[in-house]
Length: 244
Image (cartoon, rainbow, N blue to C red; front, side, top):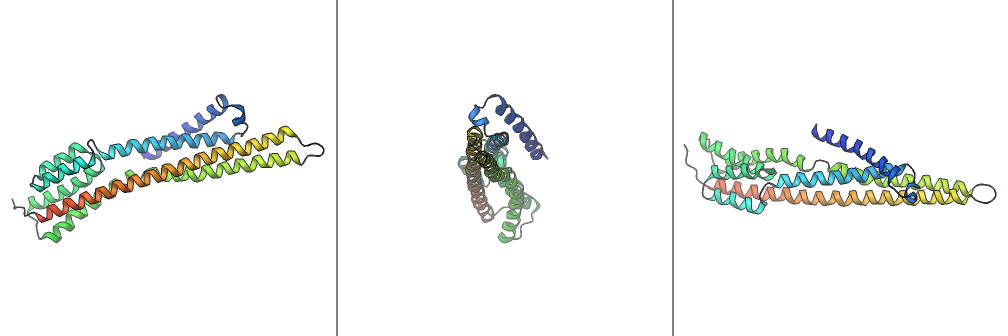
């Protein structure tokens, strides 16, 4: 719900800002690209907004401390059997990685407190199931708005191509007139085609770069979570907890 509201506000705001920029700030040679430029400007504004939102979200998902430092502290606490201390570290750290690890630690603590310890295999499966369930909740939050970036990359290119075609139609229409060609209309048509081509390529290239950057960053982040979770699970199941 929050995502759809954010996206709606960004799209409407981008169109309004795009119109204002087109009408009052752009030089004439760019305005010659026609009204389609408004949509291209809006796409760039939406892309910038989504990039900023993703950067802030990933920073929040990372937590307060750097992940390597946090993971080292948690691993040390688990090694000495201080499960409550490890959970406390996760509460202080916050973020996606901390939430996933905390789910595994909480499950282990529950098994120990209830005395429901059948064997290493069963314990590992139970803890791993809790971690996977927590990961399924966190990963969609990390990947939110990535489809919008890829959509902008596609739409921006196609929209620019539409402007190019319209501009070339105007240019050829000027050439097709009887007598001397209309030089003004010919120049406007070519200008419209080139400006829209440039705008479409700019939004398309920007969208592709942003999408690939965040996909790589999220893949690395989730890989780190998986590695850390696996290491902690191995440490937990190798311990011999005493039943309370």
